Every structure is written in C-alpha cells, then in structure tokens.
Picture 1 (cartoon, rainbow, N blue to C red):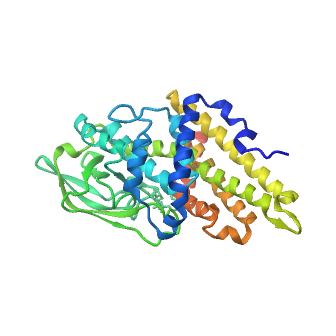
Picture 2: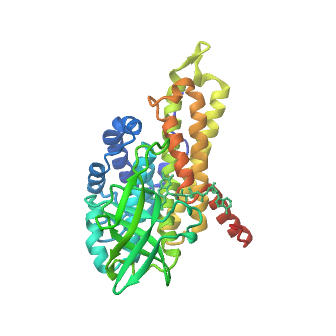
Picture 3: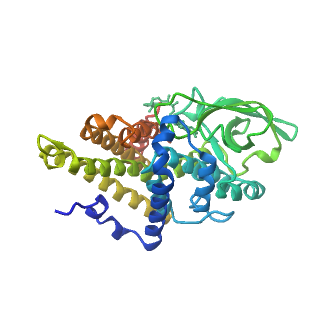
Length: 389
Ligand code: FAD
C-alpha cells in the first residue's frame, strides 16, 4: 500500500483556503532549506543566529504577521498558526523567537501602546531589524505573576524601574523589552530600550531544553524612563495575560509541528529499520503505536483549526486557548517520547530530531502557562469555582 501522510489521512487540506496553503508551503520550504540543515548543530552548541534569522523571517512577513498596519502582514490567525506549526516542526526554539517577537512584544505595543511607541518600534520589529522581549516572569513568581516585585515609581515626569525578570526569551539580544511592573495604580507595562542605563541582561546557560533559543535574566537597577515609556492602554494584569493568550494560540498549532516531525521521522525509520528479519513497521505493536499517535495528532490539528476559525471571527475565549495549549503540548510530548522508543538507541542522538523535540517540549509544557494552570482555567470554566489558591 502507498503510505499516506497524516494530513492526507485526516483530509486536513480540505479545511484550508488557498492563502493558508500558500503560507504553509512558503514557511515549510524556508524552514527546510534555511533552518533544518543547521538546527542540530545550533542545538548542540546552544546557540541561535537570531538576528540573522529575524531579518529573513521579517522579509517573509512572519513577525507580527497577524497584526494590522505598521509594516505587519495582517494575515489571519489561522495562517499565523500554520506558520508556527511549520517553524516548530523544525525546532521549538525558532517558533519561540517568532512568538515572542510577534505575539508578546509586538502585540503588547500594537494593542496597548501610544501612537508614538507604535511608530517607533513596530516597523523595525516587523522587519526583524529590531528584536523584542517580554518580561513578566520573576525568579519567585511564574505561574502567579500577581506576586511580582518589580516596581516602577514616579519621579517627577519620569518612571524609575527596579527588579529582576527571569527566563526571558531573547532577553540578552533584544533592542527593546516590554517589562511589566507594579505601580501605585496596579500593574503597568513599560517599553524599555535595552541600552537604558541600569538595564542589564545575562544569558542563562546549561539548558537541556530549547538550546537553540536565547533565554536570559533581566536586571533593572534604577532604570529611568520618560513618562511616555508606559503603555497607556494596559491596566492591571489583564494586559500581559492577553499577550500570553496570543502567544499561546501559536503554541496550539506549533507544538503539533514538533509532534508531526517526530511521527514522520519515525514512520520513515520504521519502514527501513529491520528487526527480526522484517521492517519494524510491519509489526503489530509498531502499527498500534503509530496509529494511536496519528490519531492524537490529527485530533489535535482539528482542534487547532477550529480554534483558529474561532479566533478569526473574534469569538475565541481564553479558556478555549487553554484547551488547545493543554492538549497540543501534552499530546506532542507523549508522541515525541513514544517515537523515541521506536527509534531505539538511535533515538537518543541528535542525528534524529525526536529527543531534541521532546526536550524542547518540556519548556513548551511550562511556559505560557503550565499544563496545571490550563487545567485550572478549564476547571474554573466548567465549575465556576476558582481553585488556583
Ligand atoms: P512555578 O510557578 O513555580 O510552578 C512550579 C510547578 O507548580 C508547576 O508544575 C506549576 O504548574 C505548579 N503550580 C503552580 N501554581 C499551582 C497551583 N495553584 N496549583 C497547582 N499547581 C501549581 N517568561 C516570561 O515572562 N517571558 C519569556 O519570554 C519567557 N520565556 C521562557 C522561556 C523558557 C525556556 C522557559 C522555561 C520559561 C520562560 N518563561 C518566560 C517563564 C515561564 O512562563 C514560567 O517558567 C512559567 O510561567 C512557570 O513559572 P515557574 O517556572 O516559576 O514555575
């Protein structure tokens, strides 16, 4: 029998329009030609040529691609999701670069910024000439950002920021940081040029996950900013949380890209690897594993597409994004680990992408709200009871 791709098995293309297929093909080709040949080496070296890549991603219109105006591509949310899927099929680190730039840093400025902030930052960020990061998490406050200690106080017309932000993607290479801090009037966001006196960032090394992604600690030591540095439209924690919702939406699609790459790799491997004088693919236990994984992947993609359509009509609710993030990442990590078993010893090397994806997905499981947080969000939607504390 002629082997089928998972997408053909589920007739997924019948659910996409021509623009969406074109975006997917463009990003798939770019990722295959420009990133895939180097990614294992970058992962091993713990590096990513983020600046170079950002310019190329910007040229393709992938930075802030679902935002309107200011040099952004203004594409649909579903197209953005499909682009995330294709990028993460190569590596979650590359998708993280795009998520943080477009959905966290650019989205925050686009949604909550002044006209002056938008004009200054969004066009160079869309082009990839300026890199952004998003500082919410602190060493002692991740799942519960309400406890944040970073503070901004008024001094005449200026703001003075003090505090530490931890685990910040792109933090040590960014030109601009969107930093969330407590003020007398609640949590507010600030646009902080990273060359401001008192701002420093140090890269976090020795990660076993997302090695092809820059992660940093930010220190703000009496960083003085003009009054105009505050994001005027963001008041309270709902500001940063709405940005996270945007990035999470990309992960709903993205994580399934990592899973697809694992499964495709494993199917190819199982068809050629001989055990007990027959291809590994010809054994019933193997086929049961492959069938179950394909089923979860296809179901995940159908849910992602449904959520994409909801977002494109403006109806998507945060608890629905939680459904998608919880499902996609949980199933993707399970698929990556199951694929690893089928690759045997070869599965533990960088020769194959499977354990690299599995390790990356450990970070994806934790950032943008841990699985437990999303279970609690869904639990709250189902019961009306808040069980976070
Ligand atoms: P904690 O909040 O300490 O949680 C530890 C465990 O306790 C988790 O399993 C959690 O689910 C569980 N838990 C917590 N509260 C409850 C509860 N009420 N009930 C049950 N269980 C609970 N942050 C940014 O701001 N910007 C970034 O760019 C960014 N990039 C990141 C990149 C990487 C590679 C990583 C790993 C993280 C990044 N983060 C970033 C931080 C990320 O968002 C946090 O790590 C995440 O929110 C979890 O916070 P924490 O690590 O402090 O874990």
